[in-house]
Image (tube, rainbow, N blue to C red; front, side):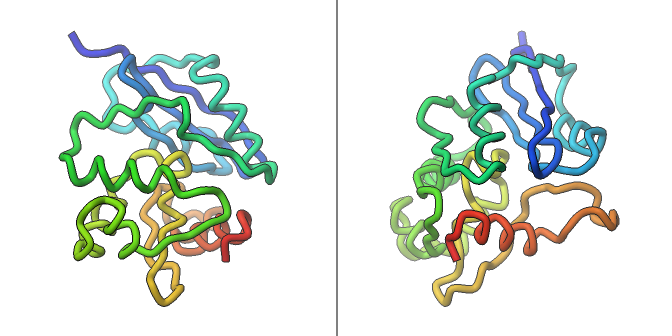
Length: 181
């Protein structure tokens, strides 16, 4: 029998943020969008019969709200992640990425070293592109060795909406917000 999936969408200063989880842990996040329905659509895509739960991971909701109010927040200390579908390398990359502190950046190459594969910077980028928990696992804090920000594949809404910004612009906005660049 499959685990029951729960979700919550809540308002932050940047828009509506979404979380989904099951009994194993956090499954997916959706970065803030100005429209609650857009957040819900992308948060729940492909999930089997998710049930709304306004109290889901309430302490994490409070931390996320605090983050978007400008407070330095550490997310990963008490949250189990449901990464059963990922191989060992992706799990190592995401685990190492989760430890990058607020306001700091590291390079793809440095993260490859931390994941135990020092020559796998490109593979680290590919692993981060699969990150289902943007912000909680702060892949936006991983940049190129030359200081350029690189790609950011976290979902942020419909690509053609004039209310939304590009992935790279969002990554820059998050890094500037954290005063990491």
